[in-house]
Each structure stands twice: as C-alpha cells, then as structure tokens.
Image (spheres, each protein chain N blue to C red):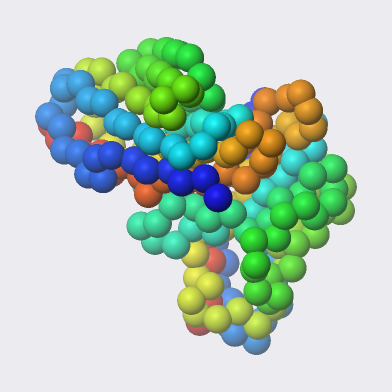
Length: 115
Length: 109
C-alpha cells in the first residue's frame, strides 16, 4: 500500500480563522513533508520531518505551524492566513534513514481558499 | 540548491504519437522522480529513477546520472495522458526534492 491520505480535500477559511490540515501514512515511512503549490507552478517544499523531528523549514511564515504527533501523522496548523496563501497543499512521505529509498509518495492534497 | 530544468514547457500531440520529455539537473542526485499531475492535483508517481532505465507499459524513463539528465518516453499517447509532467530531484545526502517547472502535455483525438 503506497497511500498517503489528506483531509480535508477542500477548505475555505477567513483570515481570522484557525484551521488544521491532516496527513496520514501507514507505510512505516519516517520522513514526511509539506509542499505548497500555487496554480500553474510546481510544488515548493515547506517543511520536512525526519523521525518526528522538524529537520527543514524553508523560511515559511509563522502563520503556518507544522506538527508531527507520531510517525504516521503530520498536521499543518493555519492561523491568520492571507489571501495569497490560497493554494494546493500537498503532503508526502518517504522511507527516511540510510540506506533507504528516497522516493516520495504524495497525497491528493488539500485545496485551500483564504477569503 | 539543485536546479532542475524541463523541456519542452508545452507539447501538443495527436493521439497515437510518441514523445520524449527531458529533465536536466545541476548536481549529483540521490532521487530523481517523474510525476504526472492529473487535473485534480494528484501527483502520480511514474518512476523513481536516480540512474538507469525503467519501463512501465507505454512509459519508459532513462537517467544518465554522469551527464545529469533524464528522459521520459511516452509511446502511443492517449488522451488520458494529458496533464502536467514533473521531474523532481534531490541532491545526494538531502531529502529536499526540487521540482522542475513541468511539461504540459495535451493529447488530442
């Protein structure tokens, strides 16, 4: 099973709201990722968790707050977002560790609209 | 970081035609993946190919790591092949996957 699940599929939120995106994988992977994709652009890396520890934060604004409660779950907490944060948010996972495959598997994404 | 360039940016094919998509990268890689993004945004893994050649049905891919390029071949294209094809790579020792800008493929009947 190479499935990564994400909820919700769609989310509309106001600029003062607090919401969370959720990602789950049951492949035993130890590295998990958040990407942001704007329309007609490639995905861009936001965060990397390796063995439940944040290892990469690509200078993402603090209104995005990641959390990795355990090795299967990854959350992205959203607060005080701006309309320009509207995008497709993609979660991915890979085996992690060395030696191992670095192949990343992506979830279906959450399409976020900030009003 | 690593640079990933894809060509062509757009490609229009008649159904049944063959095509080759190219990906150039700027550094040694531990990961080179090809994806197809469908209209709903799902990134579908096509190949994990940091080196060598693989085939899966009508699709095949070759990566020449020493020359820092990868090719994706699509044979006998179908309308369902339409969408955006991304190449993505990460530098040796890194988890950071960098995507190219993609090739938008349109297959017309």
